[in-house]
Image 1: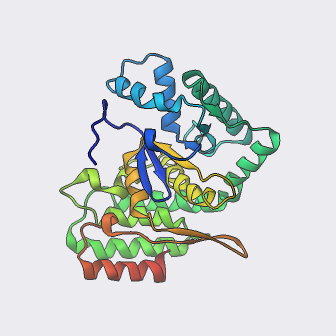
Image 2: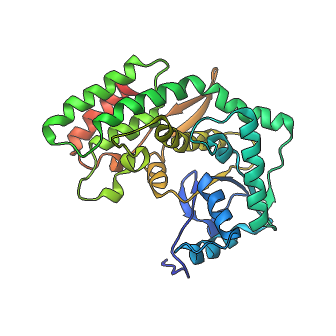
Length: 294
């Protein structure tokens, strides 16, 4: 069925089996990306940005008591392009809730008390060691990924990325490794489809703040997978980030299961991350990722 909307889609609702325009999202709990909060603020400030009419039309669907908006992922990312302190996390959550409440007065807002803030911030503390590994990995990897590489350099740089991931302890996030390797085997003719590059955004002066943005985006997807395993309504994640949407679609068959140590991630993904590879090359890379990388 073809549907023609009044405005181009500006927000994506990520579900366990894909995505939908927000107006069709079936879940009641909505995890909100920072770019959603920023857009809400631009609407409240009567911004003159070119997409403001489309944003107002789409974001009007938020203004509905059937949805409970939860900005915990936005608060975990923080506004200073670095991990927030506990006080910054709380203030960021409250600021986001206030902004969302102003623009969407009919929507429900997740109500946190002290114990909820402590539990939410514990996620950041528990992932601190891996966050540091992710940061070091991206700072080093970005130097190899500044531009699309010629065929003769691919094997050398792939080896450098795998060696780097092995040297770091704890090992970097599998999503961070996937995004970096994706930069090697992208399609130089279709830059908009280069998923890893559009998330990592490697550049000459790549910094810890640049790495923080990429890590936060990928961590949001990992946490979404985990939150979907909790009892109660399964949440969705609403974002305006097209690259993040494409990464989500690439790992759509990834599964999370309970184990003795907590939750166990079984990573499954498709070739949209590596469009440059032929089938036999793709199979060989999957084998290596399984054996050495992830």
